[in-house]
Length: 95
Image 1 (cartoon, rainbow, N blue to C red):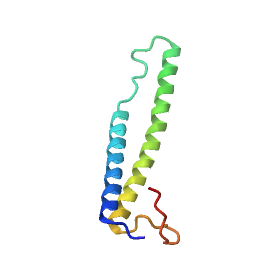
Image 2 (spheres, rainbow, N blue to C red):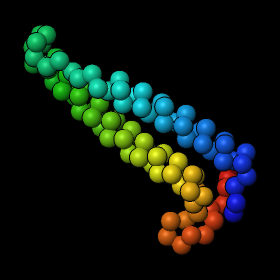
Image 3 (tube, rainbow, N blue to C red):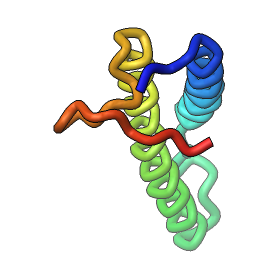
């Protein structure tokens, strides 16, 4: 399967748009929870710990998605996008 220039442009735009959103999410996740200085008891500290755990989990997912997007962009640029990594056969596009 050979992608048309229009298909390449659309895939590239979608990937770059997704990359931008993920990078913004990662940047927002850089702000860390302030442990201890404003705690009004054990419950609040527990809530902060839970929030940090959730943020770290999301950050991991975003980093993995970003890695996939960058891999796809590389394949798009090299002409390997849309082909199976294992066998090299074309992958059917579902539009």
